[in-house]
Length: 159
Image 1 (spheres, one colour):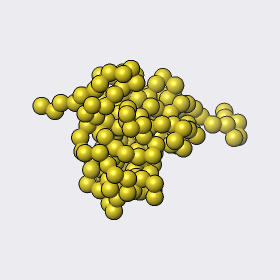
Image 2 (cartoon, helix red, strand yellow):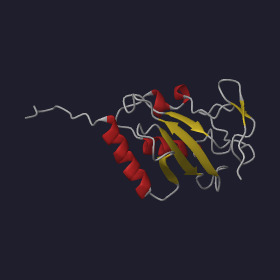
Image 3 (cartoon, helix red, strand yellow):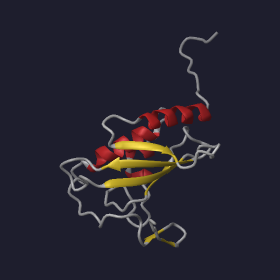
Image 4 (spheres, helix red, strand yellow):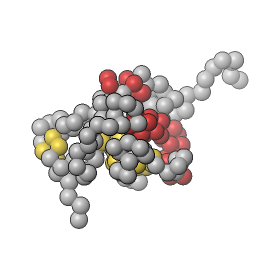
C-alpha cells in the first residue's frame, strides 16, 4: 500500500508509448505533430516533429521539421532538439539547427513531467514572441549547406 504523498515513477518505455499514442492521435489544432522515425526502434529514441508556423508572424505558412532524440535518460533529462528546416530564432543555433538549452527555458529548466508535445508547442509559441515574430527568415528548405557539430556539411535531397 502506498504512503500518502508518494509518487509513482512511470518507466521510460511506458512514458514513451503514451507519448507515441498521443502524437498519433494529433494535437490540438493540428499545427504541431510528432511521431517515431523508425517503428522498429525498440528503444524509442529517434522522433520527428512538425510545426506549422503561427499566423501573423514571419513563420506563417511555413512547415518546420525537427528531430528529437530521447536518450536512455529521458524523461529525467530532456531530449535533444534540432530543426531540420532552416529557421532564424533566438534559441536556435543558426549553423546546426540545434535548439540551445541555455537559450530555451523549457530545456534548461527541464522537469520530468514535460513531454515532446510540450517542447513543440512551446517552440511554436516562441515563434510568436517579440524577438522572433519578425526576424528575417532564410529561404525555405531543409538544412542545405548546414554544418553539423563534427564539421561535416550536410545536404538534403528529396527525390
